[in-house]
Length: 173
Image (tube, rainbow, N blue to C red; front, side, top):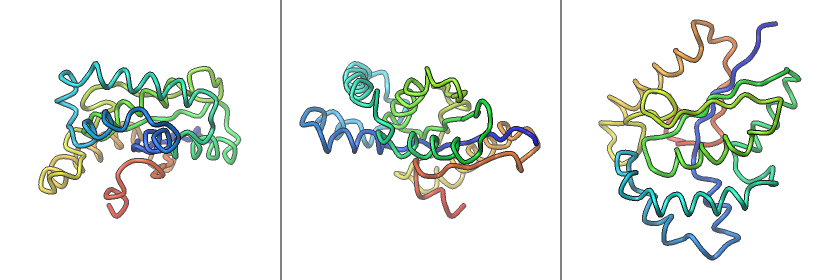
């Protein structure tokens, strides 16, 4: 049997869960939630501080995010050595930050190979956002499909598409 690969869209559940328990971070979250990835540099200091707080909070929690919880479940059901997981972030500031936290969470888990590069065309899907429906349809979805095809390497039967995180707007497509 050929090795399965998981493609996981990354959403903001890790931030939302954190904010339900903690008082600090609401202002930063609210400032960042509608920003696109191209705006990252101007918000980087606030974003990194917020991200570090969440990394520490999430460290030992298997339910820290929808992505972590579902990836652990997929791995358990597949019973496959080394599960390759490709995290795909939306064209926002928060989704790549969440992907970095998730990648870090799995760093010492030997049964997982987590792939995420914080750049357009790799881990971040340019145009995949919900502010602008025309950009979403014409650029975001096309870029998402291209990246999925690259990861599948011509063999879509070996892909598991984990949509527990990320934009639910992608589900119908």
